[in-house]
Length: 504
Picture 1 (cartoon, rainbow, N blue to C red):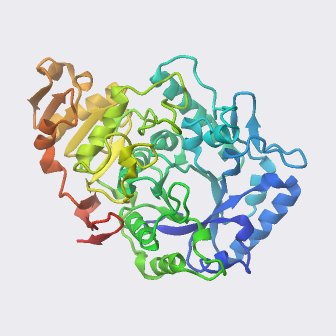
Picture 2 (picture 1 turned 180 degrees about the horizontal axis):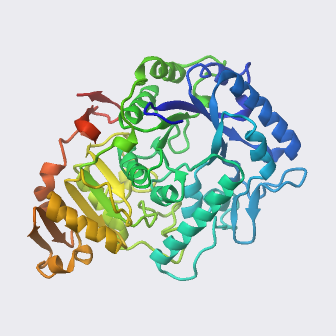
């Protein structure tokens, strides 16, 4: 899966990978790869393995690459197969996927097997396996990894970083060439990428596609890993909850934005009740045939953002409502978001010319804002988000925001150098300003020149005063702009409903 061209895929259950399957027939000649859902825990390991390998043979014959996608563990507390094979680590306090060595070994007999995807892995982590909590009527709460007893978000984040690293090494040690996440919420993308898990952000669904891209793109660039996206046709409890045209333009955005692999979830929306291809299948085929750029000269490695955000990923996306999303960080009920966590929402509200919510990243939160009609695309001008450890690759930035609970000393020194030598403008709270700059800061807002650049030191990052000062960096309202190596520029005029765009 190397090269500059975007690979196009589909999400499909292994059970439907058959010559007589309408879902398979309408896509098998249109894809480069498949994200294959597997439910092997339902039968004895030898039986489930044999059935899986029958599907694998068909994919081999067709020359289709695939990754094995595991999601069943997110919904069922007990995933013990009839023969006693354990598919999850299940203790009094913990619950996570545990793939038997034999299963991955069998998959590895195919040259087209590329790796393993843990479906909605970050969701399970930050929400303590919420689907199991709900199915047990809130009686059972199991974390993915052990949690700290304290209230320090930084300590919890660093522990999780090491836990994810160990788990990724375990999965790859079993024979998975690559390990891929799938992110319902645009959090933990950097933590995953740092530990060799390919970031895979959701498009459509309940999120803003280009906002999620900006966060995931920063993770991919910073840690030099590929970038995937799942164009998810679900919206809340409805599938399809997005139109066929919106799906098409989300695929088109991924291609234009330099994403390496994009796939649609799922083929169940591609056929009608009679098994005939519908508008979703037709639009997907159209994208595969003529919509995708099969001679793309760039990918995410060539992205050169002009607006950056640096923050410690504390898993905050706006969670906390009366019903669903518990007000906590890292899945630890003892660790609560504070104003530092919430700064990121104000920053994106500035970046998007006020189009995003000041309360959350998406439409998941139970809140009056979420009653608005969903839109995939919002104003954004060449944006990427980096974590608190970034030490290179920011030379293309013209504007940078510092926020969150922690930024490393090396990163702060690097940013200060870019201000002095490159003319970077930085917006920061006092806690991240260099000492010589902080001493000059007064009250709630100060502009302090430093070499070729400028520090804007403020306790109100998203204030109107900041907005006015940085307006020249934020692009045109109603447009998405992406900049790449060699001066390549992509400009997209967003449709009024936010579901599509026109290339300018």
